[in-house]
Length: 330
Image 1 (cartoon, one colour):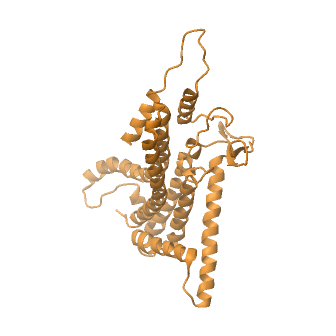
Image 2 (cartoon, rainbow, N blue to C red; image 1 turned 60 degrees about the vertical axis):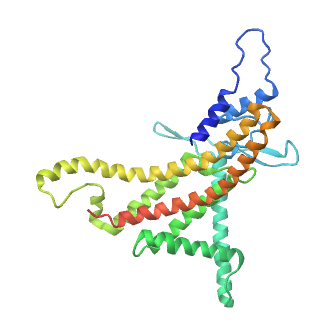
Image 3 (cartoon, one colour; image 1 turned 135 degrees about the vertical axis):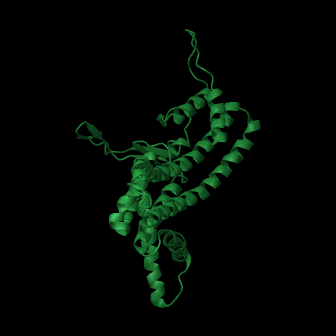
């Protein structure tokens, strides 16, 4: 992260301030137009495709009300505006349910995950009916599912944890496809949106608490209110007043950690690539093209590994948190 911040700081600092004297020509040169676009992208501004150079990095992580698709002209892409719906007013709260680029990417990720698992399951049944071992993609999917079930979910969730396997596997494959779509041309990383990762974390939080209620019954209150049974009453009351807020904060930090970890890791890689490519325009020399370009390619290859790793970590931590609350009676 220090390297990312240092590169971004060098990029922003290298951009010259606009002239303040009256009568000067304010038309930006080619390099300054690119620098201005990079600065606008860092702040989330939308830059029309027809103006200046096109930003190829930030559209992968910045949400918008338009999507980009391959097209034989207009620089090999075309922007399609998504429909805008009237916002819903609930009391003093205004809710905009209009679809955005990240919503489309989430639908695509969910569809791909469903098709992969559905078709792999059907092929698996066909192989079993023929008395043959699965091959190709069904074999790979079976290996991943069995590994996640036997090595990640069941050991962490604990006894009778079969009911949580579908939920954790759904998290894993959905996050995996959402991460990978951000590396595809014309795609976007929905998990680089804090709203998306926060929603996934909140859903996981409710599943964790529901698992605690089922496993502990009335003992679930012990995960909220700290009440030490082995202390005299003179110590129980102050310990309860001190430790109960700590217990509640501990519950809330789990979904917070899940949301921030996934959001930060999926955003950092693209920002790193943006900073490296921005160095080329900052120095404006062919002598520095090779180094940033090769480093950017290396970061993109690392991003492919991170896409799998972050999906695995989210699923593993969800299993760990479910297992902790099922065994956490005070």
